Length: 458
Image (cartoon, rainbow, N blue to C red; front, side, top):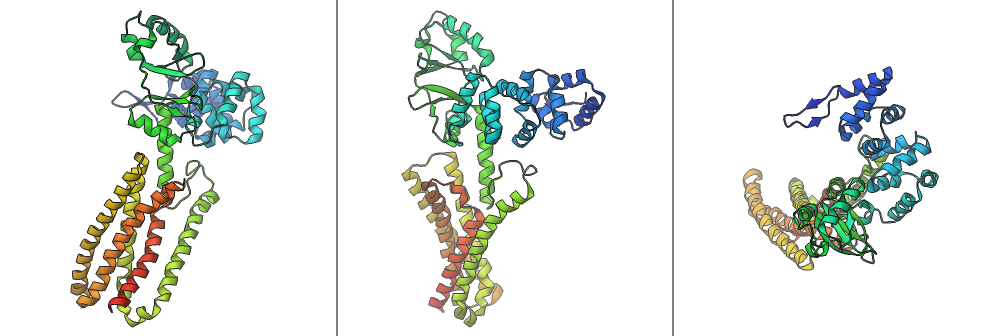
C-alpha cells in the first residue's frame, strides 16, 4: 500500500493512495479495503475518499466495523457527508449515527433537512434520540451546540483507589479522561480533578479532599467564541458546560475549539473582504451561491460609490475653478481608506482575542485618535513638500491637500475603530465593517472634507 512517512515518523497523505484504492475496488479486494481503513489514520482515509463516488465510498467503509466507519465518517467534509447520507439505507445510517461521538453526530444532523431527520430519528435508540433532540435544541452558535456529552464523572464520597477503578470502566465511552468531573446525584458540579492528580494522590484519600473546587465553566447559552476564549485563556484541555440549574450537561474539548477558531477566522476573513461567509469549502459551494455572496456586497459598495460621485457633483463648481484638485483626489481617498482599514483590522482582532470592557473601548478609541493625528501630520508634511517640488503648486495649494490628508487620516482611524465597536454593541459581528466598506465610507467623507477645505482656503 502506498504511503509516506515524514522524518518525524508520522504518516502523511500520498496522492498515489487513491489509484491503489480504486484498483482494490475494481478487483473486489475486501481484505485490502479492510486493511486500508484499519492501518491508515482516519483523517488520511477521509482525504483519500474525497475523490470517490458515494457508492465507492460506502464499499470502502462497509469493509470495516461500524465503530471505525463512524470514526472515519466524522473526518469527512460536511458537504460530502450529506451526499453520502443520501446514498445509504436508513438502517445502516442509524447504526452509523449511534456509533458517532455526540458532538459530531449533532453536526451531521444539523446539516440534514427536516424530512431526512424525522425519517432517521425513529430508527435510533431512545436514549440517543432524546440526547440528539436536546442538543439540537441549543442555538447554533452556543456552547451547548459544540459540546459532547461523553465525559468522565465521579461522586465525591469515594476514595482515589475506587475512583481509578470506576474511571477504567468509563474510559471507553468518554471523549477524554484527563479531566474528571466530580458531581452529585443531580449532576451539580462540585469540583474537577486531572488524571495526573488522581494517580499521584494517596489511594485511601477521598475524592472530595483532593479535587479542585475553583473550576472554570461555561453555560449552554454562552457564545461558542466566548467558550473558546476561556479554554485558550486558562489553557484547558476540556471545559465543563452547565445548564440553567448549574448541572453538568457536557464538555467542550480543545479539538472542538480548534474547529470553532478556524470557522470564525474564516468568517472574519470573508467579511473583511466584503464577502458573505461560505458555509462549505470553496470548491463545494455552487458557482451561483458564490456569485450571490460576493455580488450582494459589491452592490452595497457600488451604491456607496454612487454616493461619492453625488458628493463630487455637488462640489462641481469648486472642482471646475481649480481642476488641479483632481490630481490629488486619489491620494486623499487612498490615505483615508487605508488608515481606516488598518484601524478596523486592529480593533476587530483585539475584540476577537479578548473581551473588552467599557474602559478598554474608550482607551482604544483614544489611542486610535492620537495615532491618526500622528500619522496625519507625518503624511501631510510629506505631501506638502512633495506637491510643491514635484507638481509646482504654491504653498497654499499644497496646504489644501496636506490639511485634507491630515483630517482624512485622523477621521479614518476614528471611523475604523468606532464602527466595529458600534456594530458589536448592536449584537452584530464587528467583522461586517469590512475593509472595502470602511474605504467606501472614507471616500465619501474624504471628498466632502477635501472640497470644503479647498473652498475655505482658496
